[in-house]
Length: 141
Image (cartoon, rainbow, N blue to C red; front, side, top):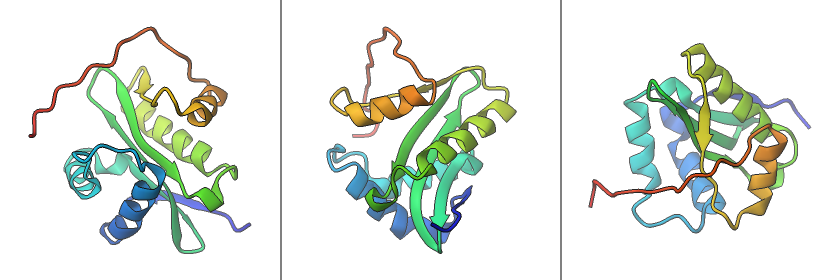
């Protein structure tokens, strides 16, 4: 396998990112429109929107953010054919380093309870469960 590269998102990546997310997150609710999420992220801490490139092909993504209290990670995805090659781990490491360089003391993420494979992935990276209830309110209708 060739060596992959982790780099910040570039505008030319949009179509490939949307395609990846639609395949990696088929159960996303309709209000999670990838193009809207991409454009909102580009306005805030765009350097924390990471992509993995292998032989010129976009094969993974991770989107991170820091609000001054906690870091958050979203949209960690790797194309099915490229999983279990260290790409997801490398994306997470780069996101964690970016957040740490901003002074972020702790990183949070959310995983759907039925996604046991992803839960196991994050546990292997040192993440653990915290007793919390995740709540949300839509501001954009």
